[in-house]
Image 1: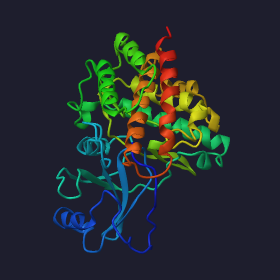
Image 2: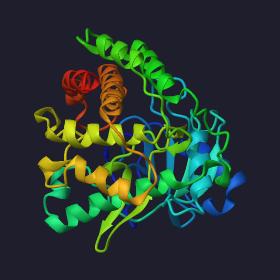
Image 3: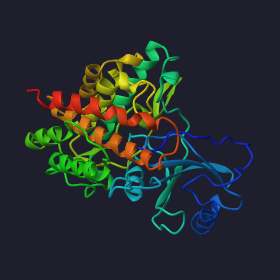
Length: 361
């Protein structure tokens, strides 16, 4: 996830008086002059732009064109959670497939340049739909078509054979779901700063009921949702899938479970109103139900969706941990943008819904 917008660069605007936080433009210009000279030759300008909730995304005006720079958050970086090389590798691999991704331009793992690893990618024109202010003006038909296009794109991703695009060693599908529970339990231990009733019970129920994972071995996005897509509504279509920091090889039902968590759990929760994580998603915002989305997905691929309750419970646990991590960074003053004061309020309802889903049979 990346931070929400604080400012947006507009072509023709005057250069920024200072570099935005997290970006050393002088060092970046020197690096580009050596490795991508076509992007050098004039003063760089940059603005922090819209995204999710942890990695930072900047629109960079360089060499007479606009490109996008991604880097990890400013502080409290959990191991493997913000891997720039991982994102860069997966969008490079998916470029020739039916999955729309931005063009990969440059990876830099030298932290001496801007203070953290980063990569550059092409700017893709489209809109990230993340709030009711954006989705309410859409017609019912546009909202439905947008949601179905989202599912068609996810089905296209899960249909890609990893080895065919050089991602055969990108992850370990065996034991993927059990590792997910352990991983997010570990993230929780390193992120929380307050009591969280019920979250240990949810962790233990998940750990004791891990399904076999018959669909393992597919490319998993790890945080697939409407506002991680660049889309258009005239015509309706997905232009690019963004935020690949959690991608791996694993069970595609994990993507579906997390999507339903955003869509049917948070999308139908009072705690999500006006929140930068889930506002504008789901049936409450006039979109089709989660069951309609799963039906569309199942008709487009060969994945056995089966019972999804465990995967929804995992999605609730994972998102609760992510929200708690954002809340923790907010208390340390390490988040950029608005809305982070409400993120912590979402943890309790996520835990409650996760426990309910985990106990289903």
